[in-house]
Amino acid sequence: MLKEFFSDAKGQEWTNAAGWVGKFNNHCDWHGVECNEEGKIVNLTLGNVGLSGRISSAIVNLTSLEKVDFHDNDLKGSIPSQIGNLLNLSSFIISYNRITGTIPDRLADLSQLQILHLHGNRLQGTVPRLSSKGHTKSSFITDCGSPSVFDVPLDCPSCTMCCNSRQECDITKSKTDFGMWSSVLTGSAVATLLLASTTLTKAICSFICSFNKSTPSTDNEHYTIGKESVYSFFLSSSVSAWALATTVLAVQALCFGFFIDEASLEFGSDKLWRYSFLCPRNNPDCRNTSEVTPSGWIFFALFAFVYLLCDMLNGLKLIWSASKYGLSQRGFQSFIGGCALFTITALALYATAVYNVATSRSNVDMIFNTVILLFVNDLDEKFFASLHAIIPEWLEKTTHEIAGSFRGDVRMNVQYASANHQLRDDQTRRIEGIEKKVARRSNAIKTIEARHTKLKKNVADLRANQSTKDKEMKRVIAKIIEQEKKVEALERFREQQSRKLKGIERNEVRVVADNKKLKENITRLE
Image 1 (cartoon, rainbow, N blue to C red):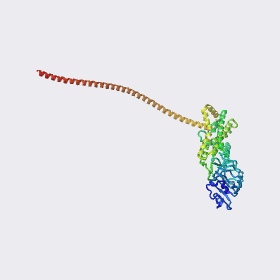
Image 2: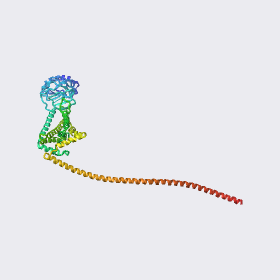
Image 3: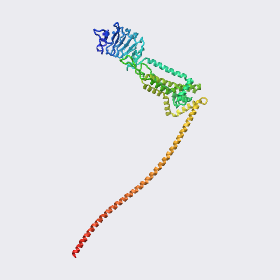
Image 4: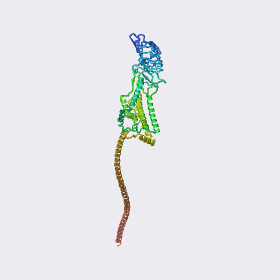
């Protein structure tokens, strides 16, 4: 039987076939073969030795087999249909081969099976429900994840882990844990909602939200729901305002619904769930590749606390305050506004949590996903700002109508009146301080302007004096040039007179010489 297995698996091409089909050695000494005391084969361990060809059906006759390990080879063909004959088989590992076809139904007869690794092949159909249960997350692994090399991945109801065509894996228990964890979170939100009518919740609301400087600590519903939020339109009597608030609420809920839907773990469909396990070829145990640490969840909780808790508590506060109006329009508006604010904020928390569970595999992923989803939660305020830029008149009219409807009186809202009075006093003092600063700065500006005017006048005078001096300088320069011309003329005249004087002197010399000669001639004549 082993010789037939050796032949069908192309034993001549194995990288290690020590002892196989030798005539003078015992089969228990062959590489990868282990026997019990009776000489019966109990283990066939031939992982990563270059097996090719197919799995011989002869191994189903080795009824004492307890472990079969052919991982990381090049086996083709299908799994022998009579594999159920190996009733003692506890480990069947044929991962990372090229085995095709379907999985035999008789695999369900292996009551002792504790390890089944079929991933990394091209198997189709349904894995029969196994009679035993996996003791670890790496017990039963198949290619039941998505994406798959086929249109529909394997269906494996008993698997402890599913892998996809990218060799990424995740435990099937994640789906159950995910649903349970989501239910716990939803139940916690509902339980919190039930506490909305308690005085303790009101006190917590006032304490936490008092740290928000933009929201006064009052019982005024307009401030509680947010003066710069579209959800404040639920406090209006305008149908168009209600339509806008409902539209924004639906859009936000739809966005969060997209994230929640993509975060669901469905091994048979392509979702955004990122598998967090890797099942290597050289190790039967899969390891978790997620790098999310408690620090990542601490930052998530911190962001959620800072950005969402106040809105959730304000929503509860609005629901609680609806009771003081009784069965009236204002009571209905306050109740609906509180439910809308609390529901969308709780949905934001739920979507952020489940999406992080599904897709975050590092602390950076955790922070990035949290920031993105919290941005969606601010859509109501961004839409309000857009309305302020597009139709400011209508927005101002609606806001005034809400403020007038929920301003209350002294008996119903003493705390708000006191806080509003204090706020106005603070604002008055601030305005007076600002006016004093403005007056001081105005005086300083006037002084500077006077100095500037004086400087401008001085500059103008200097420029005038400079202009006069420039003109005088030009006249002086002109006179100097005229005098220089006269000097040059006198120089030329002097030179002319000098030349004439020299001519006269020469003539005088000649006259003297001529007189001397004349005297000599006269003397001779005498």
